Image 1 (spheres, rainbow, N blue to C red):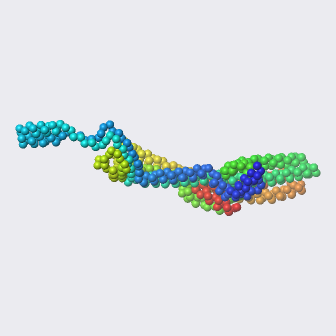
Image 2: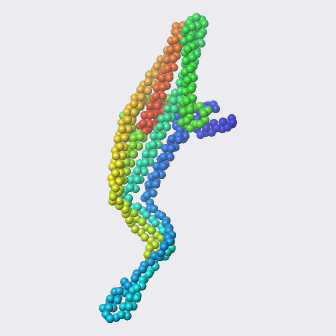
Image 3: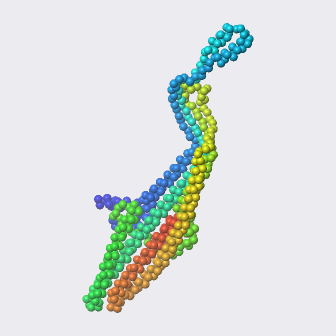
Length: 473
């Protein structure tokens, strides 16, 4: 079992470029996490499948441009022979009238003609048993423009599937940034809490020592003890939060082994320079997948409107037929081969075409209104995200400065406490303020990174996030 665990980790190291440290810990950069998520994401696989399905749908539409060739055969048994019957009186009566004109008193010839005229002449055409094997080809030469419009709609539906795939990628990337940097934030929080606990522990033991020599009273020592217990509780809470963060990131990366402990090594960052808001606002209508999908659907509705209007035009088709084999059907009655052209023209269909045209216009107008509404809502969201981005960057600068000041304050108060010039409460306040400032700086950086990826995803360029993050790796 131990050997199997070693082989498993060797394979993981070969498949994923992770730096393994220990049996169940791996250091992971953000770009490595991104590659792993792209491989493991079921959502992306579903989106890729939908794109392939859209391509197949257009291929089905393209098949209408080719002729349709069919083979058909039949066997027929008739209840009677097919024949032509004709009474001879039709021919003898005119002759008899002519004979009467020449020989009015003739009886012999008239009797003979009457006898012949009483008979019926029969010519057989088809026997009772018939069989045939035919090949038929048909090619629609003109369909009112339906095939052109259908192919155009198929192309637009492919674009819709691709935009949906881009939206899924953006959603997955946002989730990865939140979970990856969220885990980094939690682990840094654990480190801050650990340092704070060490400081509180040191202050607590100093307080015990000073209480024994009479430099502080019991109350001051109890204050230090309470601060120490609170710091230990905060550290344990942060460690429990890390378990949730580990599970979230492992699930997103498709790692089923719950013994793997991921250590993000790409740090939180704050960019010093960002493009102006106007640049993002210009990118929004052109890059946002939701807006682009609605625009494509609007174009599809326009093509469907034109298809409804083309129903007023006739369909023209060329056809050819050849009899490969036949029995009982003479070729002089039914030729073995034939070619031709035909058309169908629906002159009246109960106003169904008019209703489809009205419906297509209403659908297109509805999509136009929906697209305009989405553009307005996303513009507001974009403005809010940009403000959040600027505020997080400003907060990060402020808390960085505050952290530096609190480090100096803690150093001064620690020295003063040891010399009896500062109280335990003042020392604990300095330690607490330093930890809070460090955590606030980390939280500001995390808020900046999350706002940045959401802003870029909204503009349709979430992949640019890696360019912003690489400057700080």
